Length: 480
Image 1 (cartoon, rainbow, N blue to C red):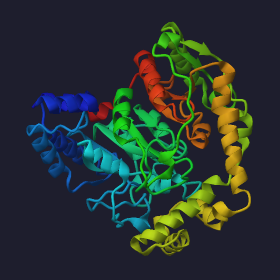
Image 2: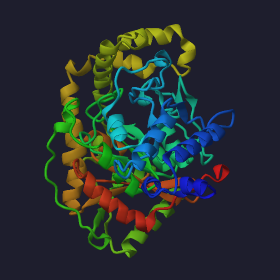
Image 3: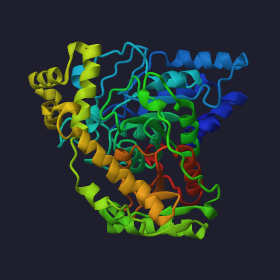
């Protein structure tokens, strides 16, 4: 039993699945160990507060996974592997789905999300749900990204302050970094997987919009929303992605046929990597970060990659300056559709939610300016929405990612931290967030790798090759 903590703290989802298959550990043992660790480090005044609720069926699912394994019915490499889920994703086990909102604190979804069903079919064991930024950080423009009315403040397992603009999958990233699960599922509209992953020194993968179903997930901006895995390695991200991706009739975006893209080289020695500088890297490269970024690029060049620097997005300045109505318009219409259909906790519209918050001001200590702006918008039928969305696509794709890929004749683009999140979000493009140790001040540092929509599998392969050269995790010493 002494090998179990080492295996679960430092191992990967793939290695844990293999250990379960080999009989070195049972799913029940792994699940109980994670639950005990959550109980030890999550709660209290100094706890991480990244886990919102524990799945009532976790131990039962683990026991069932072990019974299936004993009967020779292994469902795949994730069979028996425990994971955590962001609290805006529906489950059918009695756990509430609040999106961090106090008004929805007791809402129990009437069905499970497709992503949850697919992981269940893959044999993974759901441990519970993680805290998030309330409504994916679209409640108030002054609200910290680690806060929600239901969950309070999520703390970093690395001991650093999070701060504004981090991204809403903060609890999921913290849980993976803290060794509370083998992997977690987050969601991203723009920034919400990649930034928390980098700030907690773990891997995050945001798939192309349309590769993974959003059915059963509380929406923010459907043209940009997608779930994705947060893991310890790129290989684990690819493993989880393979289990959750695919067409779903409940989400029309997953029926999209992506344009054919040039194949990526299999070898790092043949990979061409573009570095967008203007209005991308230049926006985030502080003096302490510059050295870490330079060292990462030098290491990749030494390993044989061709670095095209700079390789700027043609429309980067325009994209940086643009202020679009897309967020508030799509949020209003998509949330109203969901609330009207389900009437969670008696809330039937965004207007109802705003009135509930006004009657319970303690639930929204930072106000609700963004909610109110969304409700006051004309939604997607308003003048200007369609033009704004078309402009977003042109600037993020034609004059953005695709423009840079073609102009630099490169395979992928690489940026420090989440510098390109606005572009990748609007483009619906895949992104891999990769930890690269610390900057000169000891703060977590990492890079994001991205390419054209639909290039998910190739991007993951390229990211694995890059990971082998530059990846370095910061380990939470206080939780060892």
